[in-house]
Image (cartoon, rainbow over all chains, first blue to last red; front, side, top):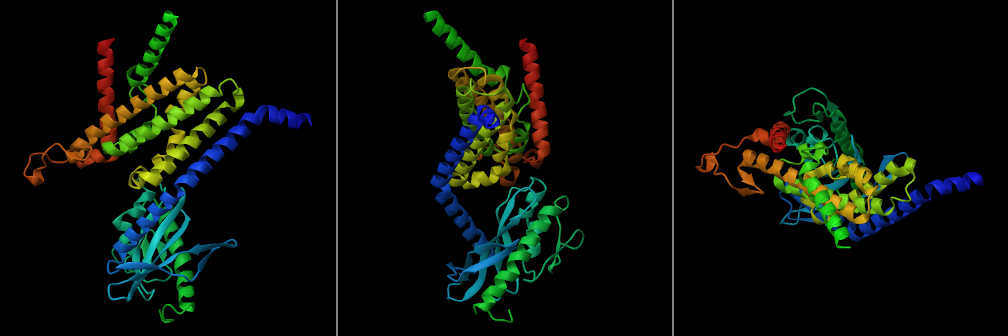
Length: 206
Length: 211
């Protein structure tokens, strides 16, 4: 009993401050979350438009798609269908995320209509080390994904970065961030592809 | 009574000016070097970072000053960090909601304000030992001193790297028929180190002459 009394005598201010500050952050978050999500959505659409230039509009897929993140965790993902002026599907874009070197990396991944080729990826959010890991945003690394087959990708430390295939050349000094992007794509792409195939939205050959 | 208010006014003035020159966080105390070098490639991000630091410094100094008599010595650093991280999180959320592009430009340097030595230094050296008004004036002085320094550094770098300040073209570029050749290195880390070193040299020279 004395120990509990001593604990509260010493730490009551810390407990109270933690509660008050937590409440303050929760209020700020609740007030601005809508704007933050809207900004993220706008960025998603801009990145997706850059990767799928033929798209005139994006249609959100109503079917629920869940990705298994391992360790029993599931993540619902919003898939957007890119529609051209003439109404045909010109590709798909979706958000995917995973752990990077410093924090979570959030990406937008775009693929062609048949889920056969990658159209590229864009970085929605990342806090990777400036000058090293944040080079995942640069064309040297990103361009390797444009036109790569929509199958399991491999990361290699050496190789020709201009050759477009399933082998991605890592950024020197940022192997963890390079690997993180490849892992995120490898985790999300096959699962989403197979679920879309199962739902009959693309051909089984795709 | 008049004497007391004069003494207070003098103290506030001295506290405010200390942050701008005598105890300038960057030029004299060499604190907050990480954002000083990292976000000064252009004036706009430097100014935004300065505003974030003023907000966090002001809020944390107010809170620390108000609870200074309740602080247990062995928990004080923990309390400072908790206070600072709360206001940094709020500043980060605000930027993400209302200045998304700037938030992206500043990247991890906004969350990194938590470990900016200026804030914890002022909490420890001033706010935990002084009343509310002195803490507020100290936060404003130090914050303005930091922002001013960042903006000066950024102005030099942006001008030499692009010929513009605050994205307004000042020097006419050679490729547009003018005379100025942009010095790209100034927008890179090397430019930050060179500019900071030269400005520190100038400040030391001025201080020596004045003393």
